Image (cartoon, rainbow, N blue to C red; front, side):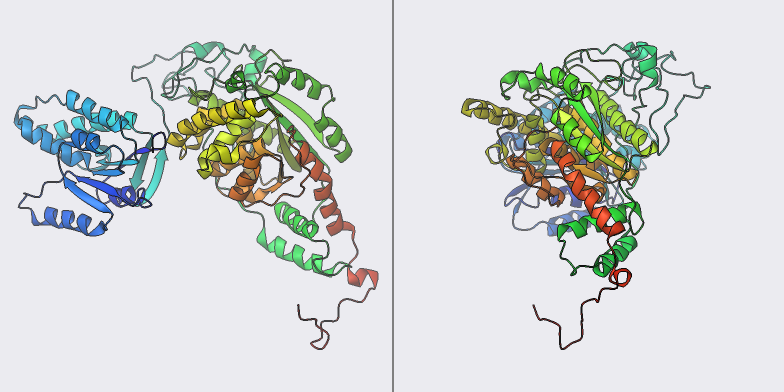
Length: 614
């Protein structure tokens, strides 16, 4: 299990359900070691009853070990899944042993460090249960304050040794994002108004684009990040981003990245309108169901628009998100990385396949530089986060702050298009090597093996395929640790372009605007977008199925059926744009085809004697 283990810290208050949730995380394992730290020598009957209730909940898969030597027990069997319940009892036992309650002079630093070292050495899934002391009433006594201080320190140290931290409150689970802040106070600067000043924030539910705060990425004040904002250092940061120059006009166009990963609830397409649309399909001059999938698409568009018959699609828009990926330097593509910038210029000048196909369908095309490893025209790089991503095999592709900035950019672009009247959106991509991070996302989210999902991308040979498989294996090993945290996952392996696509797709669903998905890269980002904004997938349709093996796996994950299968693997949004005329035709059928009554055509005779039994 080396490289697959996930270490999870589960925090919660008293009777929150944290222990039951922690046990559920190991429910699929056939063998589990249960390290119980609670004392059974107490004379407190209620306490003993709690311990007994916990024991009764464990089935034959569990081997219970009552111990306070947590580090030793973890090292004794690093390949067997284990649950520790709980750190509070362990801490109490250690302070008891040191006689620290009266003296208040307790140094558990070496023991905490030893425990964290043992945790990092686990090769099997590990769950640690602990109380979040801020959620519980603790006696305001010297002993109570000592317990709070020590447990808070212990929890923070264990959290750093874990891949995932979950908070359980009243039986509800919240996965906490990975990140850290600078505890040192920062005086007010241009990036942070004084306490009695109001910080500017033009963000609304429908439009994130507005004046950026002074500490937004790319502004002069970004040199002094404010704790808790997008400019602050993140725990997952290993390599500093290549700075992106921006003038004052560019900065004014940047959306506020604060809480960019927090999306409002997604309203589903109108089911009542969908029912009416199905009725209308059956009234048109054709046998019911005879137009097959075209009828389903017409019903979907009607439900998305909230009206039947639906309005014609007159202003579809394609946005191509461009970015380079550090992993491309590892020989995972048949083309060199500099092709990205060259193709961005080609798309901008109308010479790419997506431009030709979009012109035929009447769609606009915009290309956006999110992280191209070159300087592009100012109007293309308004939202640029950085130049290229890092190599996902060994480090995070981008920082948490950069991921928030990219998400905010994608959301703002979707808002801008919807506000300007676009009635259908398509996301495309351009970036040499981008099928590698996309495949990593698909593999991590569906728990597939690399060799099952790796395709040829731009057409790599056998040696290139092997290099790509190894890169995806390494990326998946890192991605699995944050697979339950969409923002951290995008930062770890996605890059700025895929992150912006995820924000774009999720925001389109929030704005109740239909989307045609393209191939592997876009669909991989859609998987994360649906995690960010649950229910978003109901606003999307799959334009085509590419030849990349991971694409079908991603479509199955989202429960989407492709409109076309043309053996395409170009990207750019080309497969989605090719499907656009079919979607437009589905609308035309709903709006322009005569009903039986309008045409004076006799409908099907459904009298019992004439009904054919299938």
